[in-house]
Image (cartoon, rainbow, N blue to C red):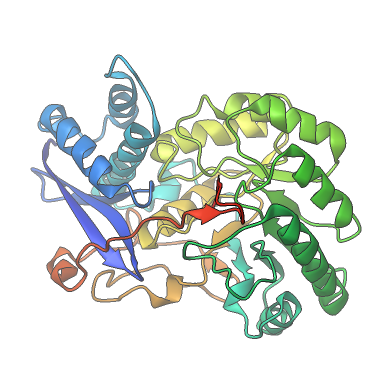
Length: 385
């Protein structure tokens, strides 16, 4: 079997873009994959075009070999765009292999370690203006783990657009809201917060102190992750469980966070880390340190399906992110998707990823001109979204 073509598609959905690829072979078997560096789709597209030149004619079943070549064939190996493009191709190759052998991808990864994959959901999926209202609604619908994003209490602040974000205002307001959630839903519902790396070390430590009696499952990405030493400093200031890693590209950047005990949950993204091939290695590294995986999956149907297969096969899995916008993905573009049952996905039974992408429908979903929000402090200084 040989690769005959790699097609790329930038598809506009819900105001953002999905970067989808299709790897075709001379046996008529194709695979679909996805790159996860949202809002940088043109860069991923250019990288795939470059990689296509030396992938045509290769055996798509040599997945490890191809993954190594994609990551290391540049003198300046790795990087965000290379890892995202590698992820897309790698996922598509596993999809091809599963279809060729007529088994689901999780079977290729070593077989199932569980009967289903349990998910958490974000607070805005629930009705009501306050965190507590949203949580109460979601608990009533059967969700047992709920994650919230920080806000500021300012009605002008919006998560999806340019806004003013003042860390201390957010710390006070978000801490109060999450305390109200705990009082409303009781001690048996798992709660988490994703701070989207918007704080510095001192601010993150202060937030942890204010909510230490809430008993969070984890605090996600409280600070930026370029410096493991900064997380080490924060670790000394708080025993809060941290979930880190969704923006990491490649396996090597995870090492200090796992080996030094800085991460308590590993937030790898199969569409950014290097596909299944790299994700398995990160999971094994984490398992050797008794850490569980909490995959990042807001990238659409392909990313979600790939994550379900990964979580089904690895033993050290905790819980999977389920983005509340997922049910609204168009069925003409993704005519076959995994079916959430309650708060979980049963094991996919169809070959490969078990989903499909209809390239004939892409004319209905032109690329969106979307840029992540650029947030400012009140004095005009740029800050993280």
